[in-house]
Image (cartoon, rainbow, N blue to C red; front, side, top):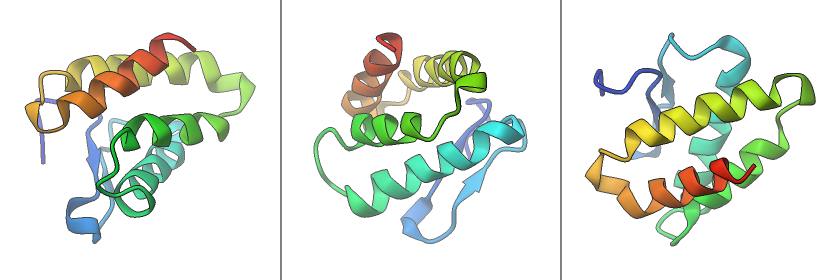
Length: 99
């Protein structure tokens, strides 16, 4: 869907979750959970992406936490070029940097 973003995932039209096979297997469920929270429970709310990140991080075990946060930080840094969700993406990126 977005080949310029390695590890891309999404929930287009709230119908079908997808995630790139490039995403490490241990990282997939928390990221998909993020998409469900952001685009169903918090749909159209300001700050939805950052709130979904907070909840996503609550599911991460200590043994992968540092690598996971580094991975997601890079992901959101790359997404900053994607104008459609710029404010939401920046808020999530800043939250990850402060972890």
